[in-house]
Length: 261
Image 1 (cartoon, rainbow, N blue to C red):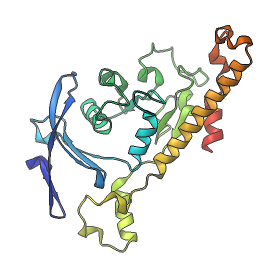
Image 2: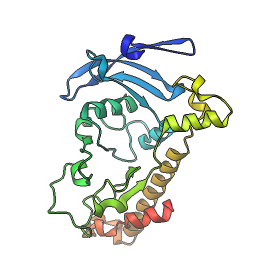
Image 3: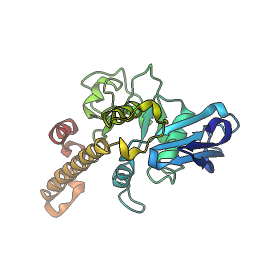
Image 4: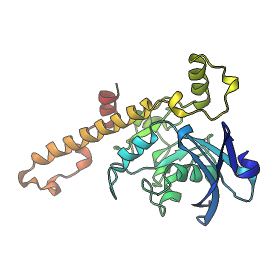
């Protein structure tokens, strides 16, 4: 429906697209037709407005709004710097992120093309690539992490460089269609009688992103507490007297094990 007419009908209710300004792969502003259906956890967009075959559907995981608010911390403040590493094609990745962060609050618009990093599925993900750091020599399993306080949220650990896998907090994979069908069947309905869009409140759970939020909060608190204790041990609280504060950081893999179970 969306591909043919920039509109969809769900249970007899029509929904029409609004034009939203995004960026193409070259950073040029472009107006795309977008239908946001938050009650269904769905957003429809089109990567190239002139090509209906580039229409896309984004199924937003339940709990994203609360997770977003936690990362944002407040007006003009962030608890974490956010980067995206994905195997998706660049045009899709940029638009998918814009749909999740339409006001560029987690990643400023002037930084999004640098912070959304596309890594082909045939290659392992590495923090050096994500942060645009100078590549090291051939990776070895005991090499120190280039960003020791970076927490990686991913549903697949094996796609990351071996030496950085202990910084991955594994998120449960998201299979919305499967979860939707299971919930409806458990409720005694014939899933074949339902459209693809089912109110998220009937099947979706924000528990997994809430778990991620709890982990990030615990790790952040642990790191700042450790640094605070180290600082109190310095005469006059002169942090400059510490030769290398990196040595004072708690080991992230250890902290992840402690707070993540």
